[in-house]
Length: 152
Image (cartoon, rainbow, N blue to C red; front, side, top):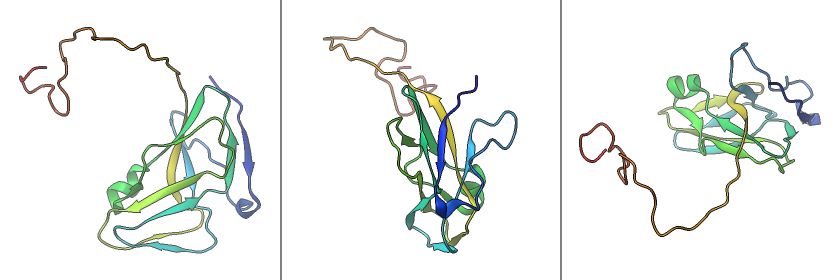
């Protein structure tokens, strides 16, 4: 199903393409760096990179900012707060917090594809406090407990 969502391109991004799906089955749209000049990201450092646009998500949706696998695999560069969440009521410029986990400086250039954005429906819940929870085969086993033969 396709949803029509309003997007605002800022003047400083007039020469950059808007996010788009690169293939027919892609889940995410690439986000581009909207920086005025090349920027070096030193190992262990992070920076907020503007994208040059804002969106008006409808109620019941979010956008997730996720790493690009190629940047992570080849350079150790990823999204610091992955996935970053853009709430439906946010109307400011979308930014990407990149971090360089690599061993050498990484140069970010204007228009470079730095992350991807996935728009998804979200569910809201109401909590009902309980004295106990129903039992499952896993129980309270977590953090690597499945498949170990030790309680789930």
